[in-house]
Amino acid sequence: MNVLGIETSCDETAAAVVADGRTVLASVVFSQIPLHQPYGGVVPEIASRNHLTHLPRVIESALDQAGLTWAQIDAVAVTYGPGLASSLLVGLSTAKALAMRLQVPLVGINHLEAHVYSPMLSPDGPEFQAVCPLVALMVSGGHTCLVRADGPGRYRRLGWTLDDAAGEAFDKGANLLGLGYPGGPAIDRASEGGDPCYIRFPRGQTHKSAHVSPQASDLCFSFSGLKTALLYYLKAHPCLPGSPPSLASIAASYQEAIVDALVERLRLAVNHEQVKRMAAVGGVSLNRRLREKLKQLAASLKVELLLSQPEYCVDNAAMVAGLAGIGQGISGAAALELDAMPNLEIGR
Ligand code: KG4
Ligand code: ZN
Image (cartoon, rainbow, N blue to C red; front, side, top):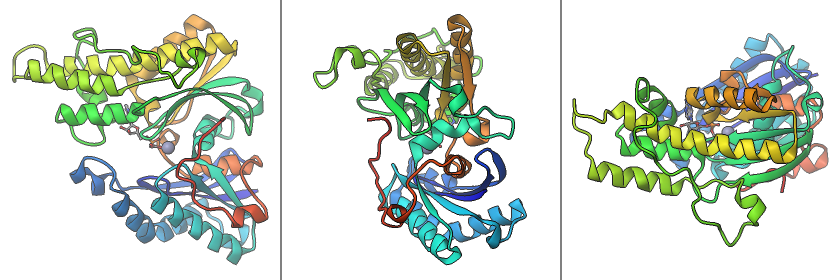
């Protein structure tokens, strides 16, 4: 079964064709990063206008690269949330029109569930049900949470962020350090050769929230204090060329605080849930220091670590088509009625 996937939830315009849920025949991503760079972040109006302009050719290239004709597409899958409303609507209306014209089923996919599925994307990758139960650390620009997966469609949210997402913490920190957008890759690069122990930035929640149960509280994240700590540090210690601490050490220390906060809560969640597998998914899971510490954690807990291939960590449509290919998502008449759901969640 060949599924055409469409993803336009944020600033990537993406289309892919996936056979039988795991074999990626084509995955095309038009990244709008250069268009948003001058503004230091994603501008929703610019994102939706560019989805509108570029989505048709992105879909056609995916079909071309897969070497298929329209007649060989068996279903159209699309992200319907969470994300930017005006961007989601471009993908959703395009997918509805295509499904009707091709007379094939339409499948609505939750973007966060698609990220959790992304490590399965390879013909010899694991089967989703076979690696469950697992605890997934979902870390991207817009979302940060810990999810227990007991199988496709069976998720329970264990922890979440009370303020900024991990990717947002990278992006805001990089902005303060003058490293540009997107901040994650910039801080990852700038940290090279720096001392991660030079400054001890806060590792998240230092106070308990009244809105979160004590048990969930240990698994929840908070990154807004970290950004403020960096701001005050830079005010007190202006970074002068050639004088210590180097930019590399400040960036490495900031990165270390984010990574430690993520890894420590993942450790607690895996221990609490008594699972034998854990996964890290989303754009931030590309971070080299995070990957290193996740591998150490897996070895110390004696659990298997699942990571996506680099091209499926950031937003892409292969994960959308893949998840639909194993029978997940909203289909049938309900799919054609779907509206964009900017605040859609996972496992609540
Ligand atoms: O999953 P994604 O493409 O988009 C969302 O669904 O939000 O993730 C984008 C985020 C950005 O915040 C970016 O700074 C971060 O992933 N990112 C990284 C790295 N590469 C991308 N963060 C840390 N280290 C990286 N190497
Ligand atoms: Zn994403």
